[in-house]
Length: 477
Ligand code: NAD
Ligand code: UGA
Image (spheres, rainbow, N blue to C red):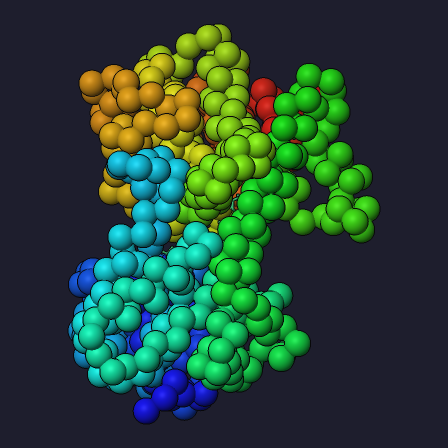
């Protein structure tokens, strides 16, 4: 046997936000390839297999249709990791790579224990030559470690390692997977490496134009992923930094963003000022980049990128502080309604959502936090607050009032969440928030009725006409 240059069977380890949707689209677009997604989390696998497509563990517009088309045909979800590895010619590693919370590199480096466990498991049970694809976001030169682990087991099998980072954004995952700007494949410049690259190119070429399939050295591919996220997050922090200046000077950040975005060298995307970026990756990937720069003796480069995260912490803190300052310097005993908890619209993912940090700061001041999010469940909201309590970071300290649990109320409908509120904070840009009957909301609130629009999705002028004390981000008065 040799490394194949065309594959008929794929296994993906990790059925999360990336593994699930990515493999569902591969299966949809390549009916001739058998795709098996495995996970050690049995509940997650059961949810992927749920007869009711509404219950899939990941909410993404259009995903249920894709899963519905391929599941049971050539797309399978199972906890039988070993069997799936043995049956596959190509194995994707799509497990989580969170920030390390212990030991050397604590708070910055990527924790690669899950990736290492996958490599060991593949090495242990491989029954032939395999192509191993890094889909998880990894520090540059991880492929080297993966290869060493795979080759440490004494067997006659060969392994080719590819780096194929994922660039999908949550909320638009299916669209991004169907029509990616590019698909990046890094591989070794050897005979085996080239065969492996070709095998993966052939998979994606089933629906992605060949000119969008970029092939590079492994190290370039690994580093490009961290760099892309760092650049994107940097744009958000840059416009958020300007939003603070707008508020002081009477400028309007959306007008500034529009004015600079029309310059084709700058471009208009990713210039939406907000309460701060969230999501599982921006912060962790930048911190990982910072760690790598220190590791390679580049402290000035490390400091440069770390500032992107610091500015984001500052933006979340600035928002919370503005709520407290505006409500006469205390929110104790006041009902603050949070519209949105997810880190962006059209996803049920809450990882690193700005809402969690703002809630913490307001709870420290003994506010009552009343939350409505169309897709996030109560257990998730409570566990997010508990997690930050155990792992304080940024401006969120560990000190919450002992009775904090009683201060957090979660609703399944917006009406009661908004009734008799002292203030409303928009934390996620769900479309439905802009469509509420704000006149009726106003009538039911305590006066003065404050609205803090952390996403600038409401019409400030109209809100003021209704009678609200409206504050947007970067909207100088
Ligand atoms: P996730 O936490 O949603 O999913 C990871 C899954 O891997 C979990 O279900 C976990 O149970 C499983 N897992 C861990 N170890 C395992 C093992 N040994 N065997 C089997 N299953 C195992 O994570 P995610 O959001 O899908 O992210 C995965 C990777 O993709 C990360 O490196 C992330 O940085 C990267 N990424 C994420 C996104 C995104 O939008 N979420 C986008 C691009 C890249
Ligand atoms: C981001 C990248 O966009 C993806 O390319 C990448 O694959 C992914 O991270 C990853 O590696 O996990 P994602 O975090 O899902 O995707 O969503 P984004 O649309 O990038 O938004 C991230 C955060 O920035 C959100 O909180 C969003 O509200 C915020 N944001 C984004 C702004 O505040 N302003 C903007 O102009 C854009």
